[in-house]
Image (cartoon, rainbow, N blue to C red; front, side, top):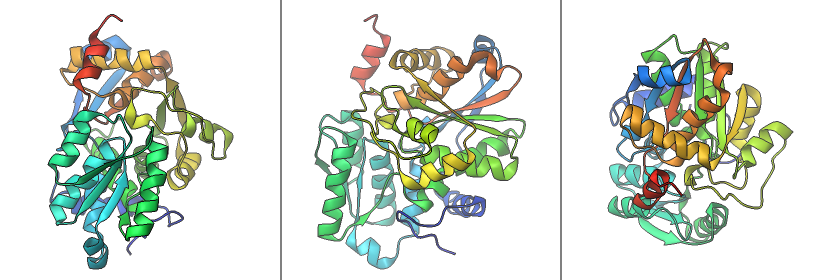
Length: 328
């Protein structure tokens, strides 16, 4: 069965994640899952870090990009693909497009992370700047797709993408079956949705906790209200979490399967970046550090648990790094 990758399509199931893994093993190696005793001692419970920052584009989304692009028809490939992104989704689509010989156009907001934009261009994709934030850019890109016949790759409403990124959670539980809690950052929600599908299929007792920036809480508010909520702004330095609205497909999965959802502040993510750099010697971007920030916030609520936090990406700009390490 081939899942249709469009809004309103059927939800992916665990077997779809297994199908994705079978494809992805030809292109990607499993990323490390590492326990850092110093980090666990600091938190007061057993914590392991899933290093998606070790992916070839520095972020987890490449899993979904490769799986989705591998499934396109010859006609879709001939038309080319287009996506809107704050950076990592765009890198994923660009990487996969180069892999399968498909032309790609990536729309990014004005002021997007320059390192991510440079990486997208280096992968051969055309970059188009539009809008003050992701939402403005997304609407522009969707219009371009309609006008020019591109295959639009939505960052959330894509069953194939969710199945692909779900392989990260599968790797966690294969590497350490004793993990009983997954903490996953939420931007559009594809990563958390994939983690829910995997965890609940393997053992419904495994808890999945989502985390979003307090300055960009659209998915969190939608999850709590049981209806789609939009916000006026998404003013966070963690561009991977900077969405002003929720997406139908991942939100439906989160409503059904997500156990808990927390918000973290800009300073909490900044502190988590510093902690990861000091204790694991890995660079995390804001979204990548959000899971650890949430684990720190939950504190004693996770005592006695074996927790895997997803370091979803490490594409922090030099300017952001200077700010994170500064006293101001």
